[in-house]
Image (cartoon, rainbow, N blue to C red; front, side, top):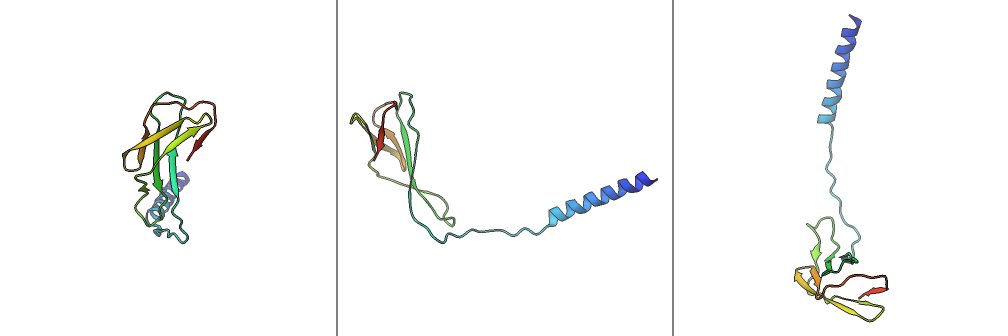
Length: 112
């Protein structure tokens, strides 16, 4: 008898908790950007695999904006400590691929 009452209380308690969680107050938060500076974002991974290397360029964006703006018509090249220069060409807005295949080696690489 006592265990039936305890089971009933557990069921009622569980239903109440579930109801509170489902109906609880949820206030939508919309962040606003107060201080904003447009910065260049460079996404690049130079691998030691001999291939055409890729780089993506975009700009930072405010929370209120829909997304990052791709950086178009940039002049990209990488030089190493032996003065080898690897140029990149734009294949689609904001995406660049090296003009020749190369691999990153254990040497100093300067991105300009």
